[in-house]
Image (cartoon, rainbow, N blue to C red):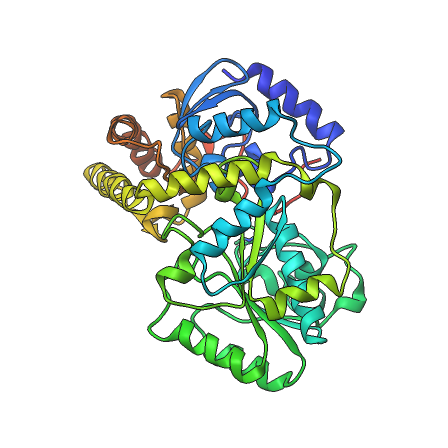
Length: 440
Ligand SMILES: Cc1ncc(COP(=O)(O)O)c(C=O)c1O
């Protein structure tokens, strides 16, 4: 039962355009009318929702923010100390300098750091710095990097209705409100397609300020792909900006670029850096970063103290435990177990992505409807699940076992729905949304 949560969300849809502040937290992205919109309490990987239901989070763990688990005691106690000593005042907090030293010790290729509080704004800042440094405007990019004008403008120049960004994580993003003057300033290429990047750099020779990409998202880089990207950037004299907002710290302490031996000019961190507290950082080479002083980049709340303190505590903890190995072990148990249970009930599930960022898809023409039905049924067993699983340090074998026991009971119903041809009748409130759409 999610009565309080449901009525609050109905109110939210009237008062807040889009209902929530983040597309990925809309209940419609999981199971319309069933997914609880609000929580009271979150600890480890367990949540108490607004209606008092106890839920095990086997979904996206705060959209990838809480790598150590919700309310990590070490991070929380550092944050509480900072709050008790004042988290904001007329002077600067010293922890932002300590955090810069820490980040630079992890990234010896870099010399300077700037901060923001969210991933998208940090990416926007990195792009501004690169453009200011190069005195050029064009950006070649791959993947998703936030909601800002520089990025969304990619869809202004697309001839396809889905837009250039449709192949880059989120389809259907309308650039309404983004000035047409930005049209043609950002040019997409596909991951693992160095030839596409090469053509862009040739076509816009002498005009490309930066190449922006995640070192990896779901796919492993092809042999030499990242090396080729680096070489192409050097040839074109363009800065290489790696977006570690989602991949960072999960695959490797310091980010995926370190795992692959890629040396960028700037790396951008967010999400897991503060384990649930807002902090984002741009780490970069002095020759590029110094342009932050030639243009105007400044914001009041980039000076508050909780973010840097949370990041320091998170990094210290991440350094003392092997999170990437733990994520791999737990995720393999999850994938292997779910595969086995689903096959035993005549269903096939496809897993993709790195173990640390698992993507789940039913192999069936009505995959989204089946996923919705699965999510609704798992909620009855006190488990949050969706089409992705961001495993965390807080997930242990017992949580995987709980998930698999519930899945074993539910999957026969899915098999029955397929056999009877009535999947949609079992989800009268409709299937989950897969991209951006209007709610009211
Ligand atoms: C790779 C990547 N870049 C940028 C962003 C935007 O970060 P934020 O939502 O904190 O603005 C995201 C968020 O999902 C992301 O995954």
